[in-house]
Image (cartoon, rainbow, N blue to C red; front, side, top):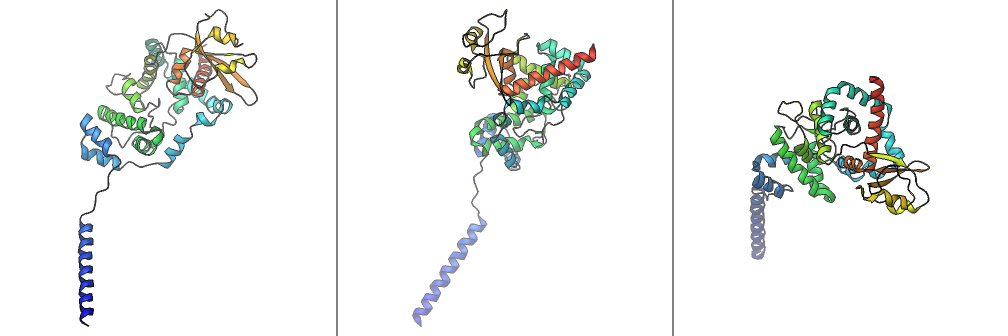
Length: 336
């Protein structure tokens, strides 16, 4: 009986201390580390952001699985040229470009003159990117950049940098970081500038001390032209032109690089047809574009490469070029 009392007392004591311990733990929870901590510290130390406010902002960001899925399978990697082209070379997109040009004639002429960038290229960019503002994106930019910056390891460094630029942009332009919406990659406005490009190349085209790439056509048009100018656009009609090949020797010239590196003389040595009256040392890139049952071959010059600075895809650049040519053709008919 005595032993039973001792064991009962020991059990009661153990239960009491267990209860006290659990109560203490419940009263003092262990804080979970935030995935944003290092980023927040950087923004505070380098850019003097308020730590508490920034923590609250980032904690409200929503991770979107649809963003991760879209980023993992972009159209440029899934489609051949014959399918990709159909997306953009449609009557409604061509006619929309003609109308946009008509409605913004003076702005386009001014920007084209100032930056030496053809109006049809500016208009085509807006057409390819957002259908002239018809689809500027439905994702909160904050959600897109936090999702990709912290949950997409393959390009985390890039998107963390874009998040940094976005927060700085919001402070500089007076944007509420919760408000801007854009693409799944965080591109904004009718011109679809990512945050670093917005800060570096956006222009106040209408003189209202704002750079509004959603609503101000003066800002949008001038910003696109300025972007191309800063990326080396040359006042030259040479962008790209179709060619032909003989045999298979040309295959050694086909590679993933977008930059022109071969001379016309080198192409001729591989039995690629080259334009008459053009210097042999002209540097070009040979493109092979897949149609359903054959390949097309194109010579891509320096300005074609500049278009790929907007989106690093030869399919994208060709869609911009061909859409621009169709828009120009239609626009000139309306003015003749």
